[in-house]
Image 1 (cartoon, rainbow, N blue to C red):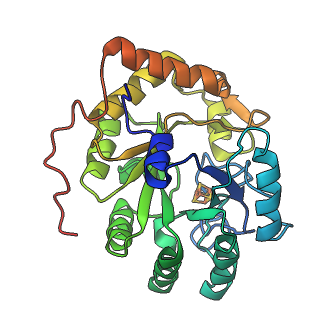
Image 2 (image 1 turned 135 degrees about the vertical axis):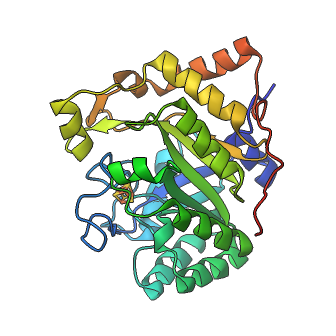
Length: 310
Ligand code: SF4
């Protein structure tokens, strides 16, 4: 029994086959790091802009796709891929430059969709118009980093925008038919379980199609690592994290695709929690515990659905 709506089963439903993501690096920066909003970045964000597993920006997009296909060749024998712009803020460039990169990524017939990770405050009307144009060629999956709906927590980790900016962006994307997945971090300093539940309830009320859940990682050379080094604060134990993820799944609207339930920070940068480096163990523990508790996505979801005027 599927206890939550997983990304792999969503892709199978959508495409009728397994589809593999190829991580691309368009050589972007981020306004929260280059000084336009701030020079500090989000306090947990690594040097690589949370995209350590993405491609080599010195290569063209076409070359990165070829190289990504080669890398997946050993474990994947199909020929359907999603071109995933992952590192930094992938809509942070003049629209004509974005058009060139996105169109190059969409061109190969084996690329079935475009996935783009970005900030909600980097979606101007002309960029949204470009994304809408791309979505008429192939589906566009946008990934927006919210992490929490609580502006007080967000100010602490220097997110650089208010939650209402995210809400507005999600509604605009929805009106244009762009699928939005939201990234959330569980265990941010200062947040308890009721605040995390508040964030799940918040996204339940929005036209969000997917969610990626991850534990807070403390990575080397980040402002968060300095804070942690000076005054170590609580980070989730595996047991607490599993319990928290299950509570999130139980509270989540049943139609939202759970695209990720753990995170894997780069091992050479990971300070804490060390157990998160064993992704397989984390996934197996969550799945086993869901079975043991005989629980499922939406079990504690009581909202009437999307209540806002779209
Ligand atoms: S918006 Fe993304 S890339 Fe920019 S600092 Fe925050 S996590 Fe890093």
